[in-house]
Length: 174
Image 1 (cartoon, helix red, strand yellow):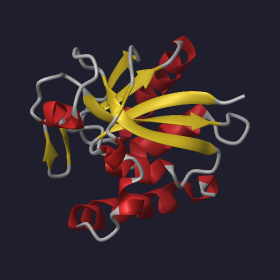
Image 2 (tube, helix red, strand yellow):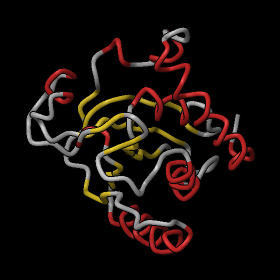
Image 3 (cartoon, one colour):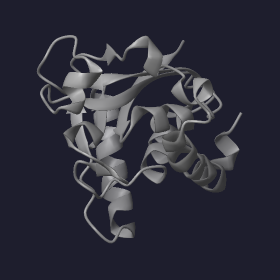
């Protein structure tokens, strides 16, 4: 039986690329969550009109990778201490968030933040919210890095995140 997890950590192209490397993750869908508009478009999200964060929804096999391991990947491959920003991407759509699917996920992420926060120079600003609705992003955003490996934004931002994943979580890689 599979489970789902939903994380926001900056541009969903980057987040998707990271989690596709993790063994036990069977599907990664880029999309939007945490906003107030039904069926948001990428353009409206980018203009800050919808309140949504760019995020990914993972389907994973908990017998192969735990929710705790997925959270560890999430917190080490983006900057959870900058509000509404990841690198050069600025705006509420790039905020750090964990959208929990049930109380067990909420308790797990809150405990992890409490445990790891002393290791950061600044407070963790990751929002922890219940997932109300996840909207898959437009088709051209899915598997973006795989389809656009020569795109300059991807070349600059994604490889360092994947390297950090390999350095910090090699045991989780397929």
